[in-house]
Each structure stands twice: as structure tokens, then as C-alpha cells.
Length: 332
Image (cartoon, rainbow, N blue to C red; front, side, top):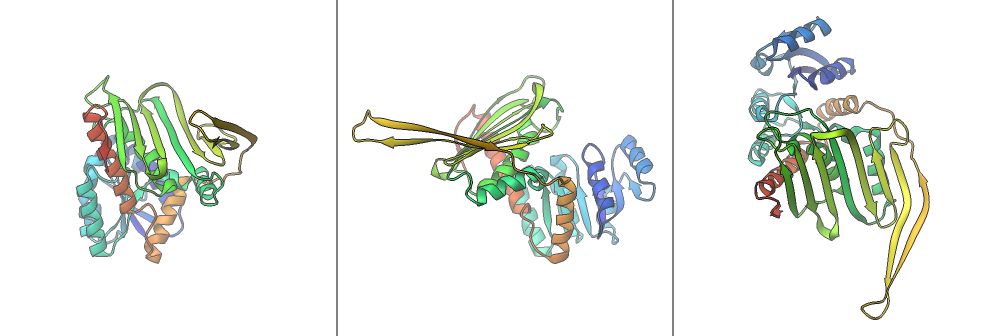
């Protein structure tokens, strides 16, 4: 399967490296506007055609699929042109800048019988795979909450705020694990260094009293990548920055029994063992790209397809509306 890659900045080199290492895939051409980045690509991959013109890749009859690793405001036009030229599309998160753009691309891909995959890399990590398994097996019981913190110092983006930059990771994981559509969103944040928010908080309300909270920040003195998921039976902690025991499952919980009478309530706490399940040791991006090649070859739809990407964009749009209204509740 012949690939063209558009974008060789921060994430593009990782995509090219994994595609060239995969059985069944071959990178034919890389397009990049920056001369410095093109020089890096030529040095690293002397056998691959390097160009400044993305249209060379889009119109090439040699290429079967295009990986779009560019700023979000460019995604729609590039993906649209790729689909119109009969190319399958792998596109960096977030999928598009608007819901309308996402819907148009999904419709076009269906019309052309082509695949779209949105780069939700974390879905392919050993940790998220294991969490998904535990939740499907009912290990946590009835879900109560999903709480995620993703903060660090930089990298500042010039075209989007911190929600659009960092929250797609957590929203795509949450969407994959909870498999339910939130009913409403509240978001607050503040701009300190530019015209875009660099600190933001997002709360999502789901049916059955499930609540999710996402904290994203470009101005933190420390880097934190931590998620807490609480259930009726058990709770878990995922700390993505530690080398060992990234995932811990706690057999802890609270049980409340009400007696007759408004003021009488029995509260009992359960504190059992903690264990750390073994995680699959894989490079998530390679696993994801291999899955994309397999989906195109077999004709099946990936679980992180355009529809999954669109759900994330809808949540981000609602959060932006709430942000602009100083934390007003926005229904989805």
C-alpha cells in the first residue's frame, strides 16, 4: 500500500518512520512547506521523493493513501482533495475545525467507498486496551466518573487553544471507553499569553449520572498525564509518565444504605487490594497504522473512523461555545 505523507514537522517524522517499517506499506512521497523540515526528510529518507507541493501527492496515481499531519485548519481542504482523488485518508487529531466539515468528509468518503481514520493514537496503547477490557468485563462496575489531567509547560499553538490541542486525546479515550454520548458540556478557561486560552477545564455530563472532567494546561511547571476512573465496584489510576505500574486498579468503594427516616444513613467503606495489570508493550502509532492498512485491505471500518473524529469535534465545538459564554451549559 503506497502512502504519501503531508507534513513533516513535529509528528510527521514519527508517522513516516512507522510507515516505512511496516510490512505492506511503502512511503512514496513527503510534502512539507518548511525548507528546513524538507532537508531533514531528505537526510533521513534519501529514497523518498520530497516536495513542497502537497498537490503532487494528492494527484499522484502511484499513491493509495495519504497521511495528513498538518495544522487542524488545513485538514478539511487537504482531506477533501485526497478523497476526491480516490485516496484513503489518515488524518491527525482533531479531525476538522467544524462539525460541518467533518460531516462533509464522511459523506464524501462513503460516496467514494474510501476509508478515513483519525489519529487517536492513545486508543492503541497497552493501557487503554487494558482499561477497555476491564470495563467491558465489568471489573469497575457501574461507572461514576472519568477525571483526566493533561498539563505541561508548552508547546504553545498559534492557531488553536489548549482545549483543541490537548483535550482531543482525552475526549477520544473517553468516547472509546464510555461509549455513550454526553448530554451537555461546561467549559471555563483563560488567556494569558496570546489570543487563545492556555488553561482550560471541561466538564461533560452523561446519562445515568456519569460525569467526566478534563483539565488541560500549557502553563504547568510539571508535566502530568493522569486519569482516574471510578466505578461502583473498583477504581483505577492511569499514570502515563511512570515506567512501571502505569495502571493501578483499586478494590475500593463506598456503599450507602438508607434506613427509614430522612436523617439516618449508613455509610460503609470498602478498602481491598490494589493490583497493577500487565500491559502490552507496543508502540501505539505503529499498531494504529498497521490497523489502518488492515482496514483498507479488508474493507472494514476502523473504530477511530470519521464518525469517532466527528464526535470529538462536536464536543470541542460545544466546549468552545461554553468557554465564550464564561462557562454556560451547552447541550449536545
